[in-house]
Amino acid sequence: MDANQNDYFVIKAKENGVQVIGLTRGQDTKFHHTEKLDKGEVMIAQFTDHTSAVKIRGKAIVMTKFGTLDTQE
View 1 (cartoon, one colour):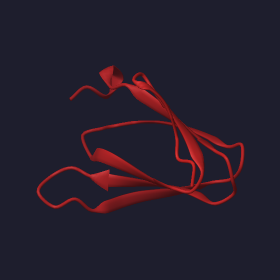
View 2: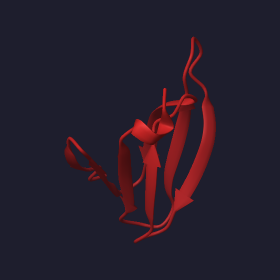
View 3: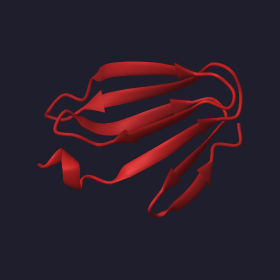
View 4: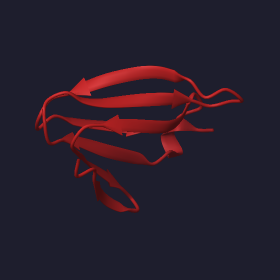
């Protein structure tokens, strides 16, 4: 998989302490990376050879090529 061709997605925190958790690829899905965002902070990310999913805890807006999602906790 060529990382330069993967689509990016954007996460914007709507409150302090939003957690962004990366999950691994493979037979056993595990947490491999965690970031904490404060209100107004933006993280630009992409899926890679090692990351197959992202879990978001807290109030945030997620923007992808498929549209915009609001966690609305």
